[in-house]
Image: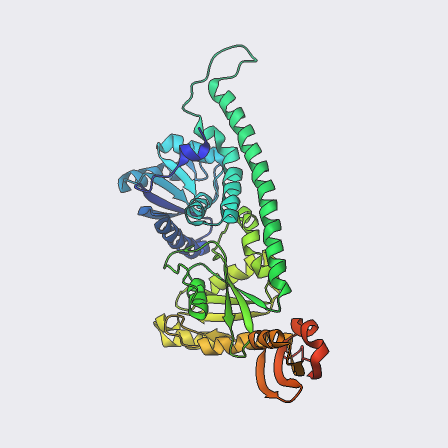
Amino acid sequence: MSISDEKKLDINNTAFLVGVYKKNDEKEECDQLLEELEELMQTMGVDVAGKKAIRNQKPSARFLLTSGKAEELFHNVMEAEAGIIVFDADISPSQQRNMERESCLAVIDRREVILEIFSQRATTREARLQIDLARAEYDLPRLTRAWTHLSRQRGGTNMKGEGERQIELDRRMVRARISRLQKELVKVRSQRATQRKQRRKKPVPNAAIVGYTNAGKSSLLNRLTNAGILADDKLFATLDPTTRRILLNNNQELLLTDTVGFIRKLPHDLVEAFKATLEETVVADFLIHVVDASDPDALQQMDTTFKVLNELDADTKKTIIAFNKIDQVEHSNRLASLRSAYPDCIFISVKSGQGIELLQERMCELIEHKLFDVELNIPFDRFDLMALIHRQCQVHSEKYDDNFIYVKCTAPNDLKNEIEDYIVNATIPNTHRC
């Protein structure tokens, strides 16, 4: 019997959501986080019967809440006929056990909700390994929960009850599982690094689409590349990174990667667990940070994304900030305020296509320093090289004479080794243009 089996959530149950804050000026943010938690529950497939923000100045070691507030909460949950209590705060294993014992209901926290969603939606082997590892590390200190139904046996001082023995066995099994998952992840990450190295041997720059969950990242990738990936109006609609090629207006190819969305209060161990998925942001030449302009919390969401990028050491990369869903902004003065505050940002609607051309132009500018203008004389027997030039360069003119094909084009820097023997004239790229 595993902890996951014991705790498997029944999606037919309804949940009661609880937010906890200390000071009055934290109430508004607490309410916003509860709304986000409600969206997470909907993504998981669990209905919400009620929610409550509780001011709790002196956290209790036993219940997190004071005894009086905990009793009042349990009464509210009974009135709402909810089957699960979900805290928008981290609760310790002992607090979890105490509340479950007192309320006779399942009690979980935000971290467990996110783990459950990730486990439902991950498809690649790497993502599943990462989730299994995060789940095992989360479950290890909570094993006692799974065996409270076992009776304690009486005996001598060296005798242990059935439950105690089973907990020890389970702990060994979970630790062994954590060790095995860590080793498997090392292998998978090594394979990904090899694949990435192979990709980067080709003269194709790459960019990563980042941003808050449900900002429209997958929809943007679909719009730019016809990728056909899932783009649902749910938090964490997609978890696994998807990379597609795009041909920009300057005839330059670009690898574009969609990454998992960020949320506030993303558990640190999940950031660690998903670093291999998010490391596309680390190796990218630049980032496209998509922001939902129609969301009242857009600026807070931007700040959350910046903080996660900082944890990944990717916050100093060149970044295009694209305010999406401008067609859904209800008040024109809000859009005008955003344009005034962020004059260098792009304002787009992935749905209507507004601003996409401008975004493409900005993408061209960011990889321009990787290009150089060159004139070539290509022998007639090197049509393979001509094909490569047409695939990866922007050809401005092409003339045939008796001995050579004269080509004037803009080429990526990484193509120099292939064409250096045929260069007639070249212009060194201006690396400070972007």
